[in-house]
Length: 434
Image 1 (cartoon, rainbow, N blue to C red):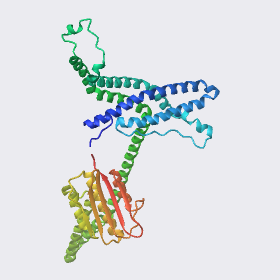
Image 2: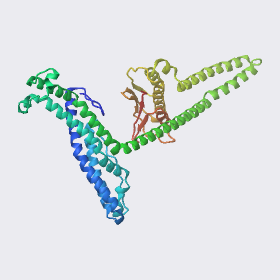
Image 3: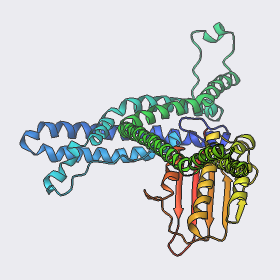
Image 4: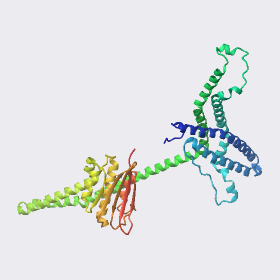
């Protein structure tokens, strides 16, 4: 199956013949339509403007605009097959609840209605050019290729001026047929491209007037939406970083910092007791060594939360396997072998699973957790589900709000299904950079 894009030529013979038929009927039918819209449009506009002083011209102008709108709708449907794409219909201005008179005159204040009328008046220019070229090329191709079938019916006057002798050939039927066939082959060989060019000229002219303003508004709206999305991602990234820093600060304050303060106090007591009670001092030092090892373990755990070395060295699958092994709730891990992804995507996926497993262990009272990672064409789907008590939420103030910010900062989407009667399913969709 061959895909045809806007303005592109089909690559197979059947597609070209079909496109030739579409372009030919578009151009040939466009000429009478252009004559109708020109006459009606100019007449209605002239009379409407001339009689506007008497108020009679306003309804006439409205009728002319509605007439042009109807032909514009038809034209948008006609240019779709020529361009190989669906051409949308722009919205027209509507006035509601302001009286029947104002609703009737609403087309007079609609920019797109005036553009439709302008197209109806000006479309004759490309229509005439396209019609002449297509008609001449079809006539030349048919007349030249079928010349042998009707040559016998044509009069062949004698050469009174000696032209044949001057050119060096005799006026025979074979020469005439060969001469006309060569012209027919030329016109037939270039017919597709001439018809295609004429149809595209008319179609792009119509699309510029009938959809140009609408397309520009859509592009502006898309640019504004992309800007808003970028701002939301930036705000989410800042929020996620702030939450992560506050959590890290709280974890350090509640864990290693307290142990280091106690370690310093124990070492100070041991120093004072070395002279009077060496055994007690050695016991205090031994306990301080144990606290040192526990502090190092906590610092390693915190460092894994910042930048887990196994994720950097061995990839997402190995990091999630290690993460599942440390979870206090049994984890059913489904992670097929993955090639190395973008570091930001791997980090975000890792923290989604890490935060979800932490919440499961602390709050869900679940008996089992299922973790699934799937690679799709456009990104990565991470799913964490449990059979716990449910009630999780992405709202501010809940534990998953910071995780939602982190996912949105990566350009992804986080969804949570956690009914109050039990069970939580967390799904993160992370896009991959192109």
